Amino acid sequence: MMTARMHGQPLRPWPPEPVPPGPTPPGPGPVPPFPPGPPPRPGRTPEPARPVQNPAMAPIGVWIDPRGWPGHLYDRLLDRRIVMAHGHLDGEAATRLAAQLLTLDAEGTAPIRLELQNLSADLPAALSVMGILDVVRGPVSGYAGGRVEGPALGILAACRHRMAYPNALFVLSEPQVSFDGTVTALASREEQARAMLDELFGRVAEVTGRDVAQVRADARRDTLFNVAEAIAYGLVESQVTARALPGLPGLGRAPRHGDDDGGDGGTGPGDE
Image 1 (cartoon, helix red, strand yellow):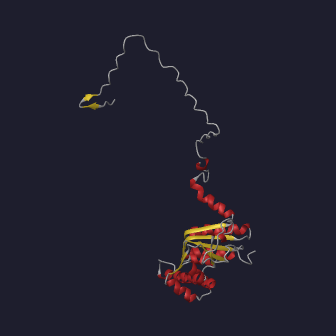
Image 2 (spheres, helix red, strand yellow):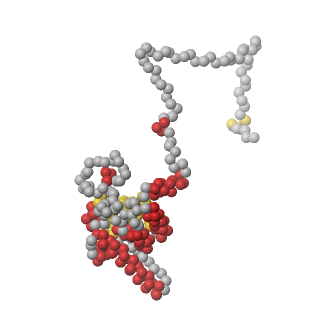
Image 3 (cartoon, helix red, strand yellow):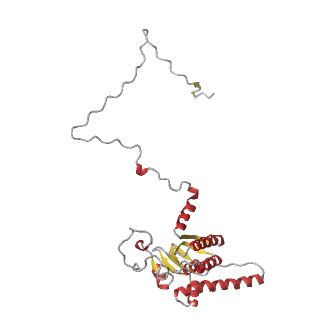
């Protein structure tokens, strides 16, 4: 047992107060209720009682399991034929992306919306997704946002329609490829890398209407495009605005200077 001490002496309780002699006073009786408040004034409506909690501030049961919310969100987007691709696309991520595109292709030929957000990619991974986009039956519209760079531009170029959000940036650059192994293996891999680069730059040149040599030269300089420059170069067709997003009624606004008047964000002629 621990005892508090002060100047080496234990603390002692105060002695009880002396009780005067005489009969023991009665204990306290029941507490009378508070008197009722004054009646309301004539012609004045009494104020209603305030609720315990404002219903507008009550939490809403969305994403009950926070650990599983990305999967639930992606499933809901997939039900609407919207596929998300963001971050760095390696071989595993490219396999998942290809599986989503092939699943939607198996369900029908309705248009598919591919969101490319802050996307970079390994060269082999980008080429594998480009191959899937070439065989998907439904028209695929690519929507680019953030920074899309390197081989990821090949994925955008493989889409039938290409739109850009106002904040988008595009970097046309040469992919970084490294090899190790024997001299024979290095020569073989160098030849494979050259063939993959030819496919990548050839696809960009095809959609932009430019010469492959010019695209290669621009890639060596790590050319940066904003949305207006990307439209002029041919990387994208138009800029996305709130009034142009499909399936978002009530978000229309008057067009501002520099908006593309014809970009409806949807599919074009011949997509049926």
